[in-house]
Image 1 (cartoon, one colour):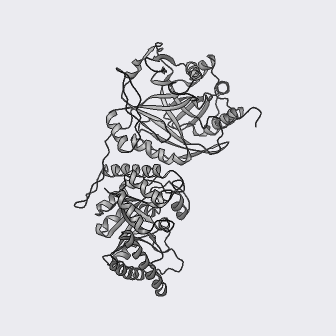
Image 2 (cartoon, rainbow, N blue to C red):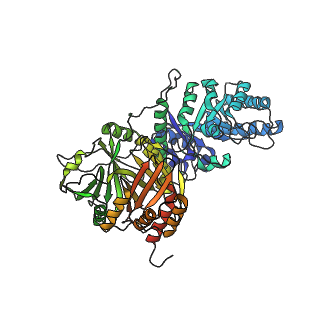
Image 3 (tube, rainbow, N blue to C red):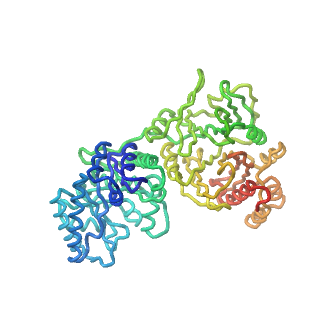
Amino acid sequence: MRTSIATVCLSGALPEKLHAAAAAGFDGVEIFEPDLVASAESPEEVAALARRLGLTLDLYQPFRDAEGVTEELFADVLHRAASKFRLMGRLGIDTMLVCSNVGSATVDDDEVSADQLRRLGDLAQSHGMRLAFEALAWGRFVDDYRRAWRIVDLADHPAVGVCLDSFHILSRGHDPAAIEGIPGEKIFYLQLADAPALSMDVLSWSRHHRLFPGEGSFGLASFVGHVLRAGYTGPLSLEVFNDTFRQTDVHRTAQQAQRSLTWLEDQVAGLAAPPVLAPGADGPRRLPPVAAPAALDFVEVKAEDASEIDAVLRQLGFAFRGRHRTKPVRLWTQGRARIILNEQQARDWVPTLAAVGFEVTDPEASARRAAELQAPTVVRRTHAHEQELPAFRGPDGTEVFLAGVAGDDAAWVGEFEHGETPAGDPLVTDIDHVNLTHSWQHYDEAVLFYSSVLALSSGSSQDVAAPTGLVRSQVIRSADGAVRLALNVAPPAFDHPQGYPQHVAFSATDAMTVARRARGRGLRPLPIPANYYDDLQARFRLPDQELAQMQELGILYDRHAAGEFVHFYTETVGGVFFEVVQRRGGYDGYGAPNAPVRLAAQHQRSAPSGRH
C-alpha cells in the first residue's frame, strides 16, 4: 500500500522534512499549512523538490471553520477557500482537509452544514479540487465520524467526501465498525495515529501525545481493516502531533514512522478476518512471519577492564567457562544463564550492557524481518569454524543477536576454551529479564522497535518514583514469559557518573540461598534501609526470624494473590548491576512496590561522600 506522512510529524524546515520522508521510503506527504507558510521556498519550488525526491503531495491541511456558519461568514469561507485552491494548484495538490467547526457560534444543523459543503464543493470542483471533511474529536457539534458522513451524504457532491482520522474516532471511544457502511469512493483520505491511554482533555491529548502506530494503546489494525473493507484505496497516512518528535532528528523520526506503518500493514494482513480489498488495490505488506524468541541466549557486558564483573559473577555462583579462542572475550554460565564479558575495542568503556542474544526458531527469517523494519545491521568479524550470528542494532545502541534454539548449551559455547566444568543443580537457572535504558527522545521508538522486530507484546507503562524524578518503565515480553525486556527511560536529572545503569535479572530456585552463599564469597548486595523492613512487617506479617535474615542479606519481597517474589540486587559496577529473582506460585510481576526503594538506595550509593 502507498504510505504518506504529514509534515507536522517531523522536525526541521519543509525541505528537510521532504528529504527525510523520501529517504525513509514514504510515497507521499501531507503539507501542513504552517510548514508552508514559514518556508522560504515558493509553492512551485516545494512541488519541484517533491518530484525530484519521488514524493507525491497528497493533502493540504487544515482548512478550518468552513461549515455551520452564518451566510455572512460563509462569504469569507468561500474567499479563503478560493485562495487556498489557487495555492494548491501551484503545489499540485488536489485534496484539502476540511475540519469540523469548533467555534462557539456554530450552527447545529446538518442541512446547513451540508448545503455549505455542497457550495464549497462547487468551488473546489471548479479548480479541480476535492474536500475531505473530518469530524474533530473536539468539534462544537460535529465530533463523530458518523455525523460527518451523514453531512457529506446530504451534501451529495462528487467533490465532497470524508477524511477518517483514527485519533479523532478512537479517542472518543466511537465504534469504527460503521466505517464499512461508507462507500469506499467517498473516503477521500485516511489519517492514522496511535496514542497512550490518558485521562485528560482530548484537545491536549491530541496536540501533544499522539504516537506512531504500535507505540500506544489504540487497536489500529482492526480500525484499518474496517476502512479497507469499505473500499478505501488511498494511502495510509500518518498525522502525529507529538512534542518529542518535533525536536528529534528528522531522519530518525521518519524512519521510525515508516517502521510503524510496515508493522501496521503486517498486523492488518494478519487479522483473523483480513479485509477484502477493492479491485486493483494493493494489499497490506507482510513481514516474514516469526515466532517470539524462545529464550534469552546471552547478555554481553563490554568494558576496558571487566575484572570487577568477573568477581561479582563468581560471587553469585557462576562458573568460568573459558576465554574465546580468537578474541579477548570471556564466558560465565550458571544453568542456562550466560554472560559474555567483552574487552575487545573497549578502550575507556566502563562496564556497559552492550548486547543481548535471543534464541529464535528461524534466525534467517528473523533477520529478514529486522531488515524490512529498517533495523541497522551489525557485522562482527568471525574466524573459520566460528558461529556467525545475524545481528542488528537497537535504538539505544544495544546489539541484538539471533541464534537458533539451543537447549541447555548453545553451539557457540564451544568456542570458549580452558574453562571450568559447571556444578550440577545450579541455583541460578536462567535469565529472567533484561533492563534496557533509553533516552527520553527515543523511548517510544524502542517500544515499537523491540515489539515489532522481535514479535514481542508490549504491556502498559508505569512511572516509578526515584530521588531525581520519575522513571518510566514498560515491559516487552513473549506470551509465555520466557523472554522479558524492561524498557526504561531515566529522568533527565539523573546524575550517576556512568549514566543511568542497566541490569540483568537471573531466575533462581532459592534466592535466599544464593544471597547467603554470595555473601560468604564476599558479595556486597545493595544496602536496603531498615525502614523498608519495618514496612514489610506491617504489610505482610512475615516471621521475625525470616525478616531478620532478609534484612541481613538485602532481600526484598512482594506478594499478591497469585504468589510471591523474592529478590536482591548487587551494587552497580560502572553502568551495570545484577538482580537475582525467585518467583513463587504464579507471581508474574517485577516487584514494582520495591522499585522506589532500590532507586533510592542506588542514588545514595552513587552520591559523593558526605552529600545527603
